[in-house]
Length: 134
Image (cartoon, rainbow, N blue to C red; front, side):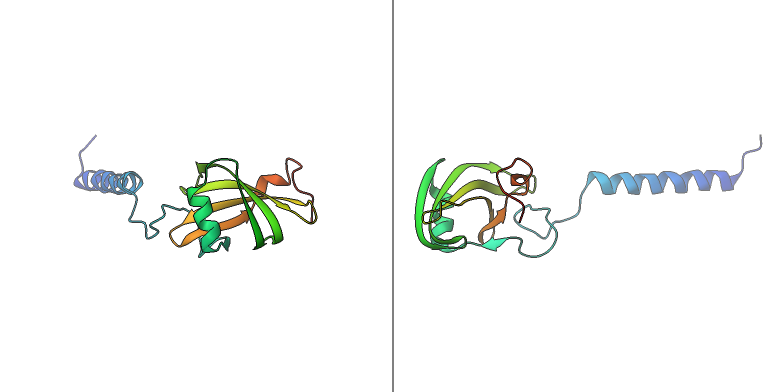
């Protein structure tokens, strides 16, 4: 089989392309988000006020905070569970929010962002029966 210069160039081009592809996988680009979050889009969730953010940053597991007004209504009791690292890389905590007047329980998750804590409804709450369909 004769040796052709074009075969050598073709193999070299394929090897170079493969090296570029593998290099891109091995060395991810610079992330613009200092929180390490992989969530797309802008601010995700409902921002929490400074008092509630301070409680979430400094309280221990199962500690309770009573609030006369909150994002979840008036006169609620907020119990914060142990903090954990979410898949997005954020520090998060499950919250049990109970209305003192109604007894209604709301399962919430709060996550820390560079600008403070934000709250979300627990996605799994409907699946495990902790929340009814709305």
